Image (cartoon, rainbow, N blue to C red; front, top):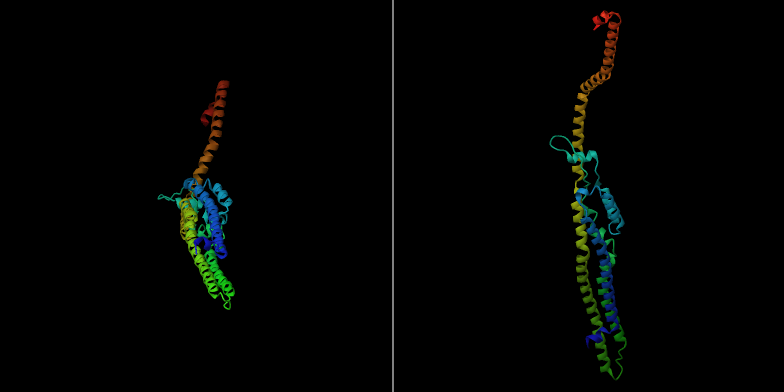
Length: 296
């Protein structure tokens, strides 16, 4: 029995057709997913950590608009700590006790919690169906094996005079029935190896790159560390406030004296200038300015 004649058997053709359809389905699904994940990686690689706070809206629009990252991105944003003066001061405090405002965006949970195999790959394709494809192929083998054997036994007539021919036909049909299981199991093993290789090349490496790029862009700060830094900042502000309140009376007195001096000096100068003019006028009129001279 030649290979060509075996491949022309209806059961073998059906099993082969299922195998080819499964392979095409996986190739198309993984190729489309690879294209979306690859575009995300390219966009993330174009971002700079220092300018992330200024381009965050652009990042938000892109990640929300991509069907592969829209859902995990919404949960990811909830774990971000955006720049704020009190938080920025907590992270930017220097040794002199002063603080500088920083624009970094911090992440409180690891990026792999949101962007992983489940959210980026399995949720985008019918993963459960792909996982049962080898089982379906394997199941087709025994099904057609027993079906062909049942048909073969029903077609044998042991009462006929040509019994040798009937037995030979039965053996040939049993061989075909056995080959159905062989082809089904073989196709199942080939599909498993092919699917794993295709998955690694088109999906796995890209979702790992997405995790790597997000870790590069966002510094991780755990909730405990964040609260600890926040307490330190509150203590620093309390010390600063206490110092300000202690210096407030002296600063207020100095400011009041300075303000009064600045307000009254011009008026006093104008009064003195007017009196001097008046004194000169009296001297010119009759020398009656002695009284004014005594005053000044």
